[in-house]
Amino acid sequence: MSITIAQRWTVSNIAEATESSKRAQAFWTRHGAQGFRLSQIFTGPLTGQYLTAIVFADMAAYAKARDSAAADPELQQIIARTKKEGSVMQEREILVGIDL
Image (cartoon, rainbow, N blue to C red):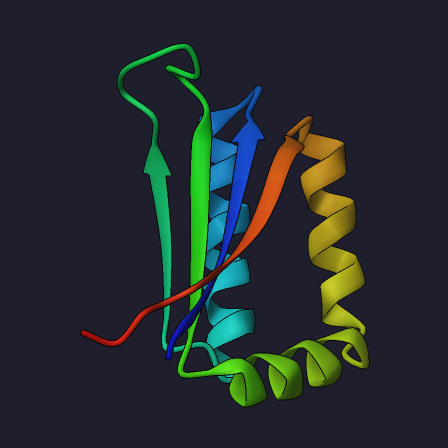
């Protein structure tokens, strides 16, 4: 049962946001994420916003990653950089995958 952390963002500078996402991808992978994607919403009322999706194997893997990430000072650097570049999180959801 996978866990996906989905976050929707407004982004003022895509080049800087892409660089921050690359750093975040490396960071979360080091802390146990199985995958990290950055996508742009292409249709509908949220067109132009961006979506990050961080995937973990299960709730235990997510909890372990969340705890180790919170203790890592690099997380605060990533958050500060994201704020400085003007990206703003609009929504965050935790999705629980259903094994079919």
